[in-house]
Image 1 (cartoon, rainbow, N blue to C red):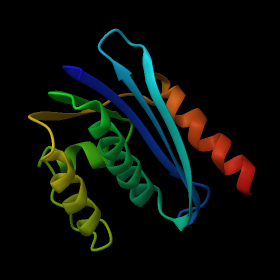
Image 2 (cartoon, rainbow, N blue to C red; image 1 turned 30 degrees about the horizontal axis):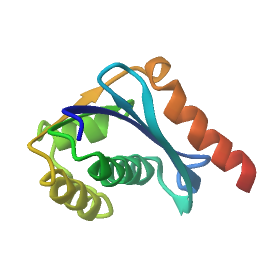
Image 3 (cartoon, one colour; image 1 turned 120 degrees about the vertical axis):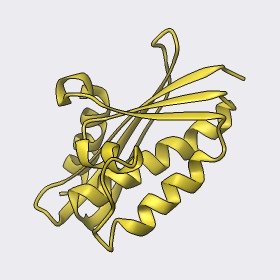
Amino acid sequence: MVKTLKIFTDGGARGNPGPAAIGVVIKNNKGEVLKEYAEYLGKTTNNQAEYRALLKGLELAKEFKPWEVICYLDSELVVKQMNQEFKVKDKDLQPLFVQVWNMAINFKKVSYHHIPRDFNKEADKLLNQELDKRI
């Protein structure tokens, strides 16, 4: 069991909608990589891919049984929706929001933080490698 995990997630589509993939990097508090994950999603939107990356990151984090999970995304929209600063108006994003919200219940503390794309290069690289394999 680890006390704190940092999850870096990224989702993206080439075209919007278009072929999409996700990348997830899970690190411990020292910055050591504990797990990396990439998955091809098929055709979807950028925002849907961002939510699916976050959902997968939280799902993968459960195996480490952390007390706290700190999520870092370069999607300002998803971060503001998860922090309840923005309403989720898009009907296709609403069920994804609910799934992430329900997944977060598995942890004592979860926070969501927007970071510039330059600070999310590892997750971005994973998703782009996955897209390059498929298209």
